[in-house]
Structures are given as C-alpha cells and as structure tokens.
Image (tube, rainbow, N blue to C red):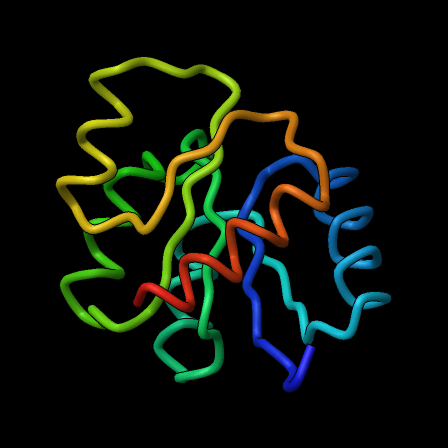
Length: 123
C-alpha cells in the first residue's frame, strides 16, 4: 500500500469494531470507529475519513438513511454498506443512494480490504 487510507467503521457490534479496527490498523490503515449514525456523521463532518464502512442496522437510525445523509452532505466520501440481513430491495436502495458497494456480513478481512481498494479506485 502506497499511502494510509482513513477508514471509519460504523457498527453497533463492539466485538466486530474492535477486531476489525485492530486488523485494519495492522495492515497500515488509519481506522476510527463509531457505534451509531450520529457519531459517524460528526466524524465525517470533521473531514476525516476517505471511506466509511457502514452497517445497515444501527441503533439510532437506519444505515440506509445514514448513507443518504452522508452522500447528500459529502458526496465524495466512499461508503461501503455491510449487512447481515440481505435483500435485493435494500441492496438496490443502497446503490441508488450512492453506496460504492454493498456486502454481506460476515465478511473476510481480505475481501473487505479489496472492496475498499476497488471503491477508492472507482470513486
């Protein structure tokens, strides 16, 4: 990897956040985390992340609504949605609202890293 990429992980599963944050950091990424949409919006508003990895199910609001808000305010931020409850309608909605990718949980770290690289390259 040529440069550090700033990644914001947004998920309400503490174990997933801690484990994925550590594993991405070991690979040279700069990673922060948030457990809800409100915190994620604040961090994105600070201009920090290049990529947001966003869970669809969040405690304070729907991840798709959070995606919509992020893309309306900061259209250049890359957003990858993760869900454990896949549906064609949700996937289509995510892409309509500007998600760069839509992935199923659980996701292998290598696959997530590849999705991030591809999304940044195509952004």
